[in-house]
Length: 285
Image (cartoon, rainbow, N blue to C red; front, top):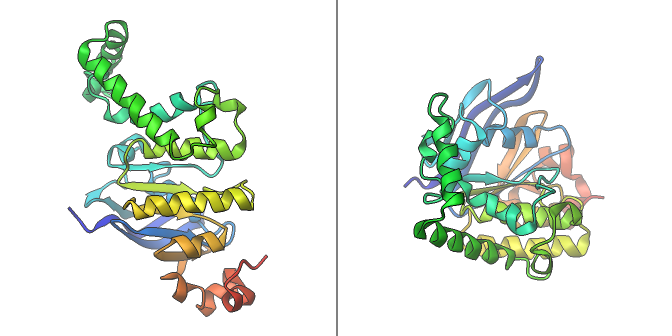
């Protein structure tokens, strides 16, 4: 097994001649927490979208555990062990919190999806659907066992947010606050036991207390060995949580290194942090 969960080399993405991502290189070692920061429009989220298959690069190579994924679809990237949350928080509003989290187990199902190897096959894809209908109508012992395991895994993820999601386990997701939708989305990714957890602004829309709570939970994940790649604007969180930081501006990585190095890099101060942050170590707001 490679020491690197993720390696990105010479990544490019253009939109009508605009270079949104311009020659980006990123390494994420197993067990690391790596952050991408930079001003709005610098290419951070586009880079995450390229890594997770939402967009396809014009050039470059993306490898996950040594396997190339640059031309794959999002579900194939997820199958390689990369699960993500989104900047605008995506949950299924007409499903409960528990049901939303269970969606994250879909790729790992075997008894419930006996013909899943045919999913996406233009000729035999119907077999996958027939198999799932059969197991729903006639739940054999293996199916019942798998469903019990899914319930236990779901409850374990809800248990990460006991006061926030615990009382809302059976609430429909559209009734949740923005912060609890973010927590549900994170739990849905974690239930898949990802090799790489990708978080796009996990504390967006959260107040100072909620942000501090999320930081504690992310530090617990990090201590447990979870590999994390995140984009985040709240710099105190980034500097506390990250082992390594990449700073982007105008589609390029202008600096990278541990927090102590990045925060004092003149290029980063000029482009993003501001002199007061480098001096005081606090957000320049």
